[in-house]
Image 1 (cartoon, rainbow, N blue to C red):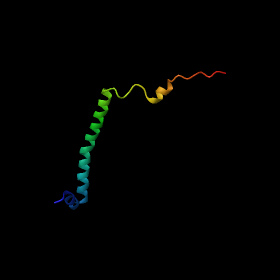
Image 2 (spheres, rainbow, N blue to C red):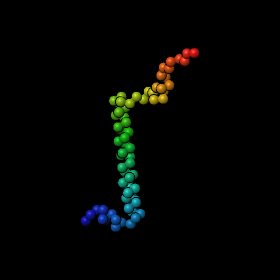
Image 3 (tube, one colour):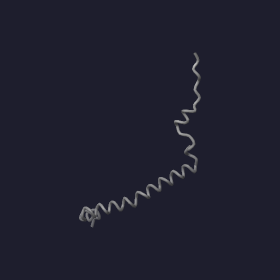
Image 4 (spheres, rainbow, N blue to C red):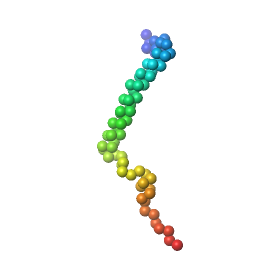
Length: 67
């Protein structure tokens, strides 16, 4: 028997409940993996957290305007 064919036999609210339960399990796992990846990249110093791009632009040297 095909599992997908058996899933179609279930009532619609039960189908939605099963899909919601699967999502409730997978979303925290995926979010945790993203956090772990960010922590690893940060530990390897691949991200410069000190200054943003706008701050780099704000402290850039500008030639004075001469009259």
